[in-house]
Amino acid sequence: MADTPPVKRRTRRRGAAYAAPLLIFLLAMFVAPLVRLLQLSFRPVDENNAARPGYTVHQYVRVFTEPFFYEALVRTLFTAVVVTVLCVVLAYPAAYTLARRRPGLLRTLLFVIVLSPLLTSVVVRSYGWIVLLGANGPVNRALVGLGVLDQPAHLLTSYSAVVVSVTHVLLPFAIVPLATALGGVDRDVLRASRVLGAGPVRTFARVTVPLSLPGALSGALVVFALAMGIYITPLLVGGANQPLAGIRVYDQISTVFDYPVAAALSFVLLLITVLCTTGLGAAFRTWERRLHG
Image (tube, rainbow, N blue to C red):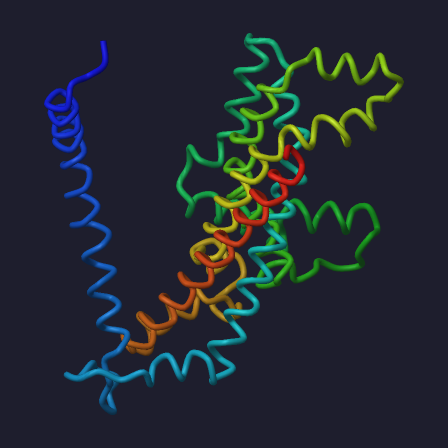
């Protein structure tokens, strides 16, 4: 028997009551600070960089016209794309192993290894890379011992070190959704591909990858969004001179004390992230509709 309108209304009210605490929490802890930060980004500043009453777009003009800021945005976008591609590519072997391994001790151990970067503080993980890439660290000692280098290289404070360390930090966010998607691929479809003459490589490229693309996209979106705003790991591993937007925001707050321009740069970074993730999601949905009709 179908629900009567009063029953439906009571169900909707009950659902709204259940969701109310979460909505209140989001409004108080997320939306309200964002609104306050948006207001701050339009404030003029005095000679001491203190916010003054009134409204101006001068802070946004600075973000888009001063190389110190817009070059950081470009480098941040480029870094996020590179890290996202690396994470998705590196996630496939680990996710495939997790998805195909039968439940047991080995699968549990692999899962713990995959999630281990998330079980420790980001500061601890970053200092781990400092130890590894230092002048007397294992990486330099190995390169010198193998004869690749005559003397230790300056691996720290380099852009390559930033990309490697950020990829390590964000890799689990790509592996987990991809492993879930690969676990949902019907093995009979893979067997049918092999029966029809496709080898393992062709089966993986033409069957496994297309069927796992939703998981790869989910992981890519999360990694990209996190990479756009990450700053602790690049700051500790690469130094304060790395031209990344997150470090520029941190520098404006902690050193220059110019809160309005830091707020403006933060919102521009947020807008770029939202536009890129929305565009990628829309492109994937368009491709999926054309593929499946």
